[in-house]
Length: 251
Image 1: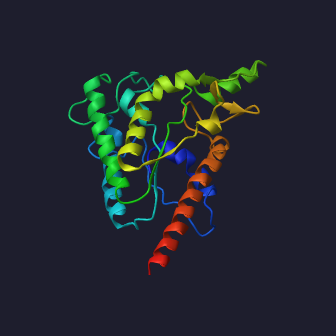
Image 2: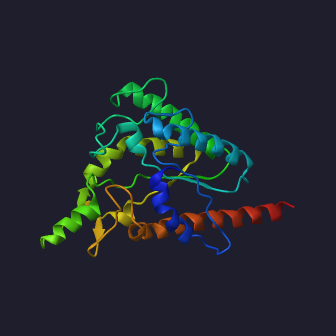
Image 3: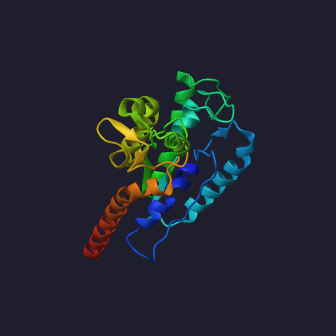
């Protein structure tokens, strides 16, 4: 569940399932942070997001406790605002609020964000396995458009951000996810080993863009994450087998 970043990689998760009879129940909405108590600043997205969060509450209550939840969001944009020019929106302005809208991500605002994020994560993790995916690297420019323009003049363009730039942008969210892991056992999915090397995160591979724009992975790019999801599903299967064995021995 999540937003358009979840939509961009759900087919990779589907491809990683260990059995052909298994499937993904996908729940997402554009610019929607599934954190209970969060309100969207952009009114056109508020109603669909609220409806999604209400339905998630009901579905999570009904679903079997052994069904894992994978949360994939562009979480940093909700807390820190855009890092690129987007439809005239001001950069650096948080996209959600809890008590009052904020113009900047002040320490007080970030602490309020932290409390609600952890409360939601721990509420879910208290009843079922929860996976939180680290943020996808954001390139801040339209990758395929920029590469195409460069190719037209015969100057193929390599687009990337440094690991230092990535961690500067997403340090707050990484900290939240680490807290959720420590407090309530949320598991972490890290896409960086599949998208980055030891110095930079790259926007293309073999001359093909990994992104559909500046921050959403393309279908070509999301295939790089199939091994990440496969590893997570394999760990769940192994734990399930071990649990079944323990139950059998206890009889």
